[in-house]
Figure (tube, rainbow, N blue to C red):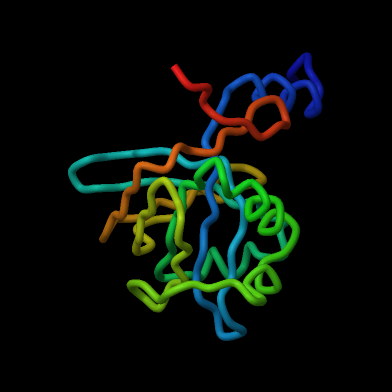
Length: 159
């Protein structure tokens, strides 16, 4: 048995600064998205990335079943979008402009980078699912990324 609580573990994990992403997919009810910071590169050959949705999320079944998804690395100007997509999925698209990508996946603009992916594998990750995606297309910009550290959003200070 661990000698720490889940709250202590979460606080310790918060010491690791991460980027902030929104993962999107298309469902039979319309576009769906969620804010995620569990994103990582897996492999360059083949090009693979991973992210991990929580099983308790109401959006989990749609992402578990998705054949395609896009991971958007948010820019520092997209903090409000990160908050909106953390709170709602389909409703977050109301009045939001987006284009359709591979697999009809909704693509958001203004991001630091974007990865359009096909679902390559899913692995048990306890209370999360580890979703591995094969990267089919990338888009990058010079927009600086949005960061998340100890429960707060931030940006890279000018050097």
